Length: 336
Image 1 (cartoon, rainbow, N blue to C red):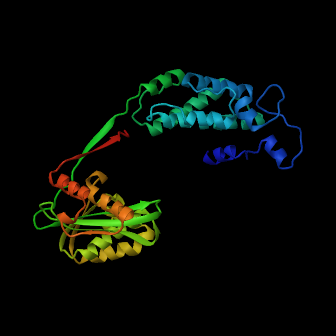
Image 2 (cartoon, rainbow, N blue to C red):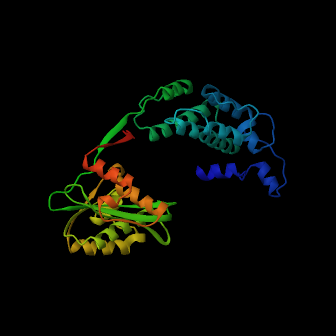
């Protein structure tokens, strides 16, 4: 469908008016109308009697005014509708579903088939509901009446999942090394950072540097951060913690390594085989210090701290917050 939308937006669908622009000469007659009309993009998707009924049926109750608008303006009006952000994605899908089903109906009639306006409305509603259930899986009530569905959408309250996230110090005798990578562009300007803390949560060492060799992806920056931490910290009992589930599973050899970082990962595996290193995952909210340091390297340049006093003020605040076990709250919509 995405290719169809691109061709529609670029006016490259094989309709009669497009074919005439390409040099073909013939009499044009729209197959979707009882009375002969020239087949154009505007006619098939907006101006024909059936298209007008469909747009009126869906736009009116939704509060979308489409009078005297071009097709691109109608689609934009749906995309930019001022609605709750939880249902905005549904509004953005509606005009795409409508033009897609109008296109399918045109092709059906062109081949001698039949499809009534009521059947067309049902097919559009069915596609909208399937899309809605795929994106809002905990939305249980989905009537096939458009007005009732709009009411259900506007009264919909998503279920939230709240997770408490804290940075935890390592056990006595161990060190914890948090790592992170930042990429502005993905790929783009990138940096890596790591920090080492003891069982009391005190900072032992922290470093962040920009990767100036070129543009890198976030995954490459994450892998570089881990390798640099292991090379710098020759500690036998260490927990390496990051917010990349990909890197955690790659380091534990549960997942295959992406080819872009295979050399880096093999070096990480070699170092891990020589020491006692555990790998753990933490949500981004619990990895704030190294996230801050990685972005600091991109904003101000390379950075090194050998103690708590060497950190900038915001870094000290993050250290104290972690040591006090002040939780961060991760809020997400429930998928199920």
